[in-house]
Image 1 (cartoon, protein in one colour):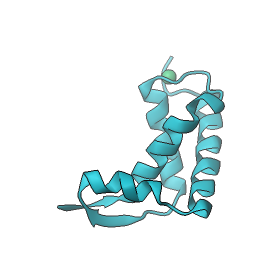
Image 2 (cartoon, helix red, strand yellow):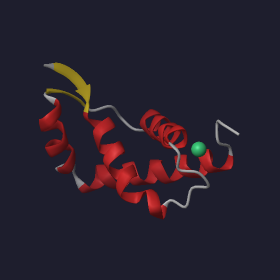
Image 3 (cartoon, helix red, strand yellow):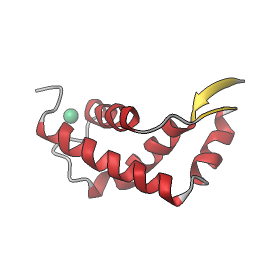
Image 4 (cartoon, protein in one colour):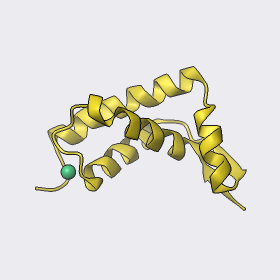
Length: 88
Ligand SMILES: [Zn+2]
C-alpha cells in the first residue's frame, strides 16, 4: 500500500479516450508523456492511499467538474506539445 496521486490515473484515462480528438501532430509516447506532465502540473493533486487496482475504479468515479478541468488542461497541453514537440 502506498500513496498515489489519483489525478495521474484520471489524466491518463482522459488522454487515452480523447487522443483522437486532440488533433496532435504527433502521438508518440514522448509527446503523450509531455502532455500528461504539462496537464498534471496545472491540475491539483489528489493523493489517495489505495492499491493500484482500486485506483482505476475511483478515477472513473471522478466528478464531472474535475473531468471538465482535466480535459481543458489536456487540450491546452496538446496544443503546446503539438506546436513544439520535445523531439525532432
Ligand atoms: Zn512525438
